[in-house]
Length: 88
Picture 1 (spheres, helix red, strand yellow):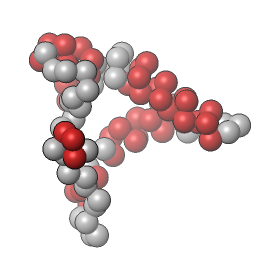
Picture 2 (cartoon, one colour; picture 1 turned 180 degrees about the horizontal axis):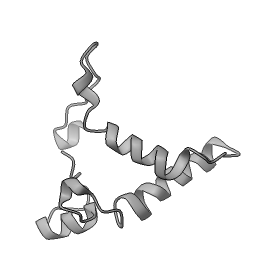
Picture 3 (tube, one colour; picture 1 turned 90 degrees about the vertical axis):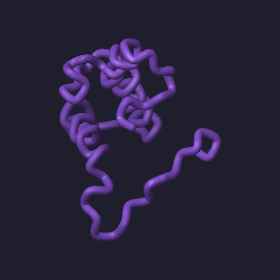
Picture 4 (cartoon, one colour; picture 1 turned 45 degrees about the vertical axis):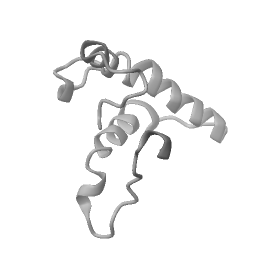
């Protein structure tokens, strides 16, 4: 994080807005992928979440915040480098 000039947010006690940006992602992850699945190992769960993020959430899922395009499509339109998060 230091290399890119980022500051980690460790959530202040009692401040419900600290996690507001990431909460919709976790809601989507749970409702669209993990809620009704049983994983045999932690590694299987990890790989499934990575697959969800890379193959669906970032590349195909339409996001209302991004005017109903995927983050990958939005990044291409804005000519952002691949490593830049569209949620920052």
